[in-house]
Length: 318
Ligand SMILES: [Cu+2]
Image (cartoon, rainbow, N blue to C red; front, side, top):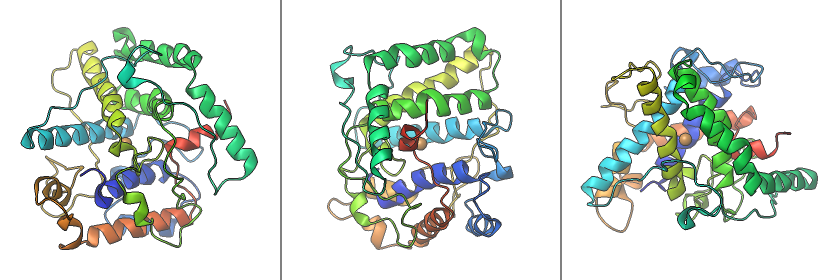
């Protein structure tokens, strides 16, 4: 169900829009286009400023925590309806060789045909490092200790915590547990003239390094379960029983959705999961204006070359 094009596009676009919103390369025309389609973040709330520095006081980190909490909640609801067990969060980040189920997949020879040789070589080396045992000790275990210490949590707003988590431990956990993908989906930054090819909608495209596919991978839910538990630790450290969320952006609210109960998974995806076996009727039979709109926004962002993904951190120098 999570492999549907609709759900992939929602997750991809949610990350892409907010990640690009303050990028100077994103033109006013592109922003107006996105706004017009109902996909702009409220109050221009984005995690980074025009220089790429984290903004810690605008509640955008709450959006990150809230949106993924919503995804977890909805998948758990679906699983309950299907009589399947609930998602299980990592209680702590798995240590090297500790959990056979959560062994770190081996590094591979990174070879994205859209990149040059030097970049691929550098990305392969970075991948080796992120996946090494030493990388668990430093920085992962240090980040984990920092983010779970109540005295630290009592000094951070929830939005600051969300942004810091996302850009440090979370992004790197995605790449540490990523397995060699079935192929490299061309970033719309390179190929903005065509819609994302439907071959990337196949269930085995579950690469943790790409927001188009990461949520199709079971590790995503373990990892995000740990991230989600940080909300509860933060609330406990601050003696808050009911979080007063400000950042609750989950993407465009489709018709019939309410602000009180936004949905990260569309009703169409739900219907598909619950409905008839065999063909995914939800994606064809009904109105797919939302799909076409999302595809158009992806191309617009790509034309400005502003889409970033988890794998992009392999490109960043240490
Ligand atoms: Cu996500």
